[in-house]
Length: 100
Image 1 (cartoon, rainbow, N blue to C red):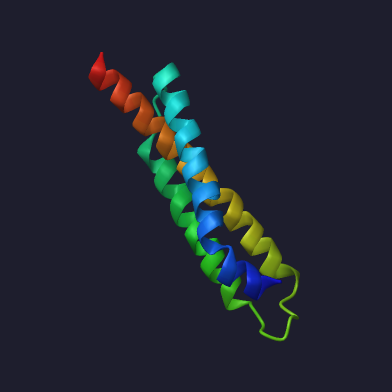
Image 2 (cartoon, helix red, strand yellow):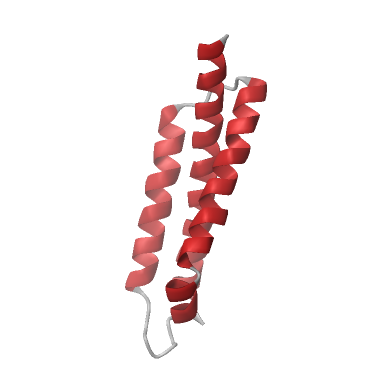
């Protein structure tokens, strides 16, 4: 299943998993003018990428990757859309403040 997920659905996962939260975050930021610290976005993005990369070092082609592989990928998969959401909120709020 993992090779299929990595090979075939990669683009759809990126579009739905990152652009969706970023668009929602931009709407929330536009509406609320929320101030989000830059370090929060950077920390979530770096942590998400690092978790996914470390998770794939545990990947085994024979299908016995172990529970740590799935835990690291799951945490990375949560952190990356969260970073997109926070970045969208910051972008939407900045655009609204600049407009007003």
